[in-house]
Image (cartoon, rainbow, N blue to C red; front, side):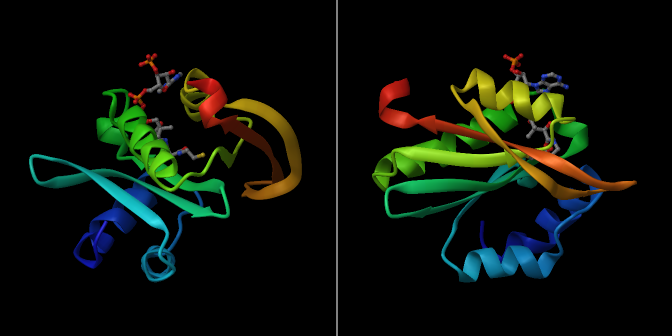
Length: 144
Ligand SMILES: CC(C)(COP(=O)(O)OP(=O)(O)OC[C@H]1O[C@@H](n2cnc3c(N)ncnc32)[C@H](O)[C@@H]1OP(=O)(O)O)[C@@H](O)C(=O)NCCC(=O)NCCS
């Protein structure tokens, strides 16, 4: 992901999430040095993933595919790209949070070897109050 991609990334974010990150948050991710990747199809940004890696641990911060291009394999491609960055950076343990209602994301992560390790209560905004997060993790070397 480069600064030139930010407008398209923020547009996908708004199309895919009820509570989207602003374009400024994505810019801050680039400035912070997080590993930020996009998938382009025919030169059009179609999805993106962001992971922070430090001290042998990684945290998937965002993974998103445009609603019109979901279920075509791009989400798994992006997740694999993020996990490959972990291997290059010697991060062995990878964490992420997901809404328990997000069946598609849970199926993707669990099929990639992530397991549920806990709950963060009232983590996400929701239409009526807050929604918990499921915390998932994978140990890369043990899972391969
Ligand atoms: C989660 C998300 C990134 C998956 O991306 P995608 O490109 O649609 O996923 P893929 O086509 O690569 O599918 C990979 C796996 O995800 C699971 N999956 C994807 N869509 C699914 C759906 N609608 N229902 C159930 N499982 C689904 C399947 O396990 C699938 O593997 P399979 O094709 O072998 O069955 C996508 O749904 C998305 O962007 N959602 C909105 C943003 C979001 O919620 N991100 C996750 C935040 S934690």
